[in-house]
Image (cartoon, rainbow, N blue to C red; front, top):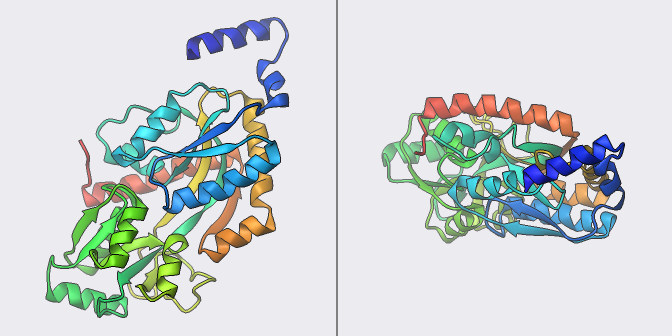
Length: 322
């Protein structure tokens, strides 16, 4: 189908017509799917729904969020890479997009060549949180506890090779402690077990953990960011706590490679309008997110930079999935 689509576009171009520009004028004429690679209820789902609702309003067609979790995010990503490049299948990618090429021995797509960046939405710095039943009230106390009971404490993640897993690896390595890693198939089930006390600790986003911290079910020890969070000004950074671990969840919109440039441009413009809305910025900021819009080419550069950065971390942590 992609070959047929490309041949048709070439024929129209020879006839002096721009098929992409023609379609972009009316686009979208039917609902648009935004795939996410992790379960409903997590950070990526929350952010995608906020963005999707506003894009629905601006463009007059439903932007439907479809969760397709599994295989560290590669299932949904592969589906988008193989989708028709017509603007009706998009993906809200996250940090896994730049990590997976280093973690998986073989992935059925190219994180750069198979996708057309639309725009960067922002990020959510990770917070080192513990279950309220754990005695530790600081990073130092958590480390002391872990040293007293090597391998007894657990830390969760959204999956092997995820940013939350690698943040845990960086932390335990820097602190010289041993903790048991417990991977999940997404942030929602991991957070559920953390709040229930089945996990001791986890690097999680303030966006989804804030309500549990405020309710006293979790205790935040530090934020893995260069600066303190405006919504949690008294929370130390990991560097201030003595262990300069920096890790964020990030998210941005992409389409399959080959999607007509005029459609990409229309989506890029619409996304920028959404992120400029005061209520969107407030919702994301109040949850602990950082809205930092980037245009399509800037987002492409960001993905490449992240791939290089995480490759170094993955190599040092010796994390591999066959």
